[in-house]
Amino acid sequence: MTKQFALVVLNWNGKQLLEQFLPNLLSNSPEANIYVIDNNSTDGSQELIKTDFSEVTLIENKGNYGYAKGYNEGLKNLNEPILILINSDVQVTPNWLQPIIKLFNDEPKTAIVQPKILDYKNKQYFEYAGAAGGFIDKYGFPYCRGRIFDSIEQDLGQYNDSIEIFWASGACLFIRNEVFHDLKGFDENYFAHQEEIDLCWRAKNKGFSIKYCGFSTVYHIGGATLKYNSPQKTYLNFRNSLLTLYKNLPNKGKFSTIFIRLCLDGIAGIRFILMGKPKHCFAIIRSHFAFYKRIHFYRKKPATPKINKYFATNSIIFSYFVQGKKRY
Image 1 (cartoon, one colour):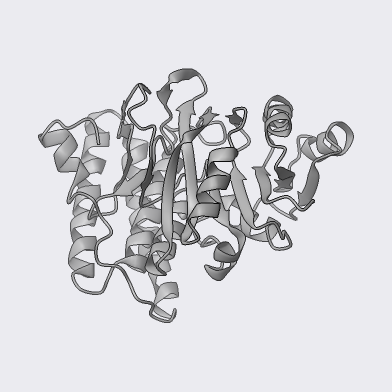
Image 2 (cartoon, rainbow, N blue to C red):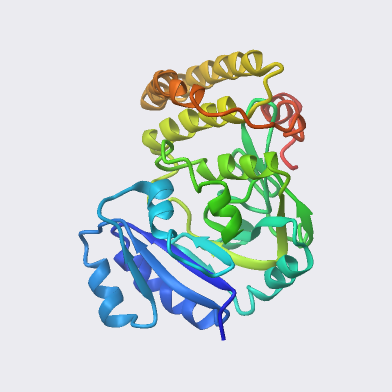
């Protein structure tokens, strides 16, 4: 019987994580074919798959292509109707696929789904990267139900629901295969971080629906491949967020919105200086110069219709830091 899901782990030098989490994926995902896309690891990851996990199909990329190109290359020849893109540091739970199978079967216009993502190290709390579904504000700052900036909620069942969201976390993202290829996959200019927000925004622009399914639960370590406090992550997040705005904002008010965002980034840089983190401030400056260098690429792209109502709140920064709202 043909399986509905291709469960695909992207790996780069994550041998220990594969040893830890692959058995869990195999035992709890009978509805899926399991694949590992390897980004040219040098730690013996490929040999581990070949010798210890014969039921896993290994796809070998020729270089470390990062998240975006790594998945784009590895997914080219997979034919299962639903792709599950899952980080190597995610633990799944028994029957986790059943609620999502039902959701996809019942809702043909739903193209992308995210499960509930809890913290592997503190399992009663939501995990930073995705939590209970993602949104952005008018200026492109992402936040989640269950997590706004560094305020993370305990899971008390408050998000045991299924709702429309704006973006699904790349830590565990379900997407219809045909939609992924219709969107031409991830934007490879991103390398890593926030490429899933761009993908979801482009899906929204094409009229597809994105859902959070709180009846399916996974646990994510988070920061296992690039630490949360890394200046490189700050650089990638700020650069890629600006690129996402530039690509996907409707033309009306586009440049005024980006200008305000650039100013807000400057405030964030000053805050990093006051916190004694000058490397993060410099990372924001680098991200702006990198953004300016890359926008010419998107000027050559054909124009596509853009949705006007992409944000659920004008400024999550104002709501959080001025009004003191710590929850969605």
